[in-house]
Length: 540
Image (tube, rainbow, N blue to C red; front, side, top):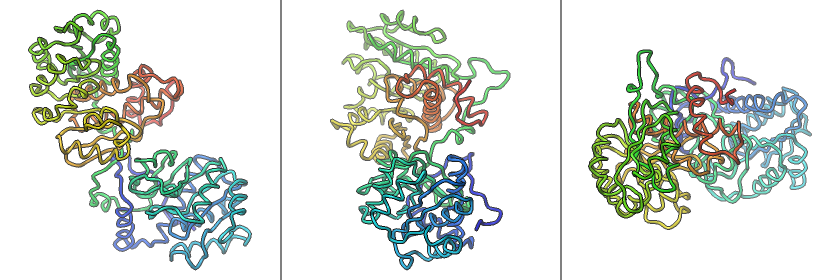
């Protein structure tokens, strides 16, 4: 049964989609039922219909396809029973494995079970299947649907779910997870003993935090959020401090270009970067800034490296600075750099500058003097690691862009492992404590604000785990600063656009051989992609 005049659609593209906990989503469901007078069974119908639509979009017509749906006893299982009925009506060859007795089903799930029984032969539904039936049914299917445990799971997966999950994963068959892969903690992304490795996850109403953090990111596959009719006002009033960064949500933030504009309209960036053997870092950052729309870029670099850098850059300018005997920026560069920064619209420092003792002293003295917004990356972060109080002296919130190793050094830790165990908590705590915008790079890059807000990026891919990607990100973010975006806007927009460019480049050259220069070349395509509203296809 389809709810009249209701078609699940992706969450609205003009806002940053919120991320919610399991309890917050339950509150939204409850409020919708009690105040908007939408029954729980109606929400379940809408959820099941949403999954059926995504299935058709990704895998084609279900007609004739052998599809096995594994259902638990809760509302997640009820969603699965709706899906089974809808796909049966579309002539799919459905096998339902119900891992509980019908008497154990929740009220709404029992309603869906009875509706399914009205159209399904008894052979289509196996109640409390044996291990051998689970193995046979999952291995003969062309598609599996996981509707077992949902967002309410908070303890280790028990039998028969543990066995079912393992057989489903072993089948090497695409799995669609309903709301969240079974076995993943909805709030933390923790694997609770074992968990489904989904090809696609279809989540309902609002995206769940656990889909984007921890080990959850390895289990979700592609994620689609479908609207099941939760009123937008209820979501806004929830006031979630976490949201997703999606290409669609950037459209309102990206600077537009007026007909009467000139290069000065889009800002002049001051980039403090480079040292022997590391002029490439400066070049990548400069090129990325220009490819993202900056009007002018000047790189302040040690005198002896200027000619090398000039050879790498055509559109950016360079400015020679006093240097140490090791050919790094010397303390004598302090006054020239202060004058240099004063004439620029935004500053980025750190790529390739080294951690030479005199250079480090220079940077520590320079930072509190800057009146412009700035991005600090790479060696700039390493220089700060033992001098964090300097951050409180900055005249404006700086943007810090550490990878997990650099984050560990900022925290005085020896390993990135503890950082990755709680990326979101680490980023939020540091941003609040030191009054910075923190960009914690890595799988699902996190952007944290001192107020307690945070955003998780949906773009990017494993091919971006290569040298120079961070330098490119620095250039992208400082470009948006120079074009007039606030630090919070520039950091979020830069991270998401950088990831999108990486995704577009990976579609052309593959992930294994992807390099930072490839990503930079695709930055204009990523911008055009967002401006035009087209899908993420590879540019011709």
